[in-house]
Amino acid sequence: MGINRQGQRQTMRDLRKTSKKHIKEFYSILHELDDVAVKIKNDVDLKDVTKDNIKDIASVYTDRTIGKYETTILLSKLNIDD
Image 1 (cartoon, one colour):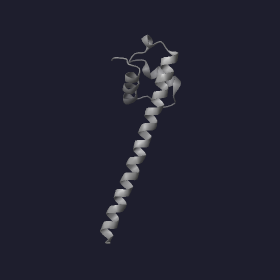
Image 2: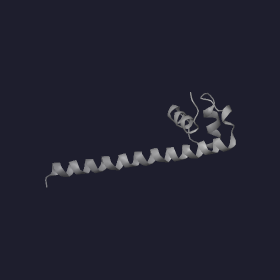
Image 3: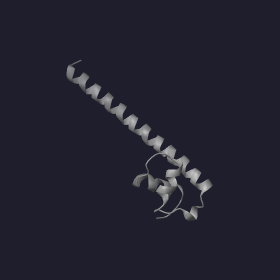
């Protein structure tokens, strides 16, 4: 087997490892946001939750910084329209 093929296999292996790592991180974020959504449903009246104050409410339940993407996920899990 030539050096070129070995290098190609190593780069493909590295790409699979990094993509697997990214997928695991993504699903851990989703799991954490699921837990936060359940806690918000149990503790807070959903009429009080809006797009504007979801970051403040969610920051009580998690240490993760709530960005635009996380806000959208939480609002969809709580069935709140924009």
